[in-house]
Length: 325
Image (cartoon, rainbow, N blue to C red; front, side):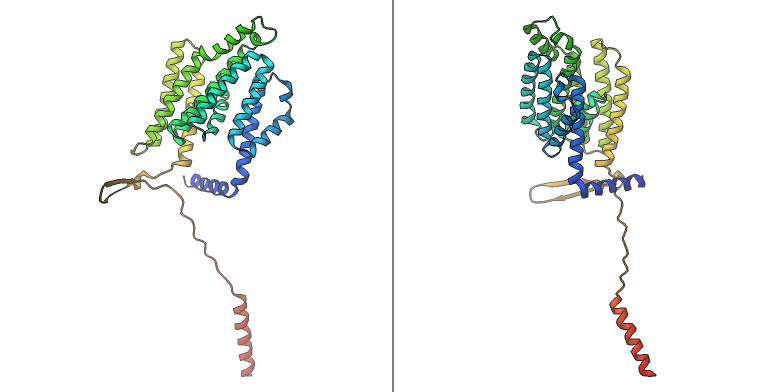
């Protein structure tokens, strides 16, 4: 435990000292992953796929706010969908505008969750994000999770039906438009995942804010159970098979990641809990204080050697010896 605390303190101090370099690097790597994922799944416009283009867009995102990354990602997605079918791009544009209004109304500062959510779903670790948002964010931060989830499911459905949307497809313009709308309106798995993620985020958020011992740990365990039970039951009702192993692994991984977040952001010692009561003219106050776990700084003993004073003392001693002679 002591070794982990030492590593945590070193990471904290290092990041605090060099955050001006770490933040752009993190955004650059995140943007590169996002654009790489987009091109790898719906890369219908060849001009956006070369590596220099990816690096240039990622570099722009690294020095600008995270909202710019969201906007640029939306533009890249629309261009790819336009290369596939104009009707799909039109539906995606309306969808992005609605999600943008929802996002900027409720969670404009939670852009990082919106960007990470599709990446987690792409890596089959979707429950990690609602758990993390419930621990570190606010209740309304679930909006950012919902936005990222809707976009990912829409793009996955488009990719699965790209043959029907493409120029070689037999569907007409109106049929393509209707099919694109159906990727959102009739996607029952997406609705199930949205409901599960909302329940997980809200449950974790409210439990971790309770004034009880080990609230964060209880929130993590209950959140993982809620995610597993809701999705497992939903998959059975919808007749979706082949998801059990992925669901178990993603739930366990979300549990592990959440425990790491608890150690990094809420590492407290409940054995030294103190309760304080005091009052003023209008209220009585009952305060519960739980100390954080930290490593005491080792006091450094610095010995100073005054060379000038030592030199004067040595010359005085030599002068006295010569007088005695």
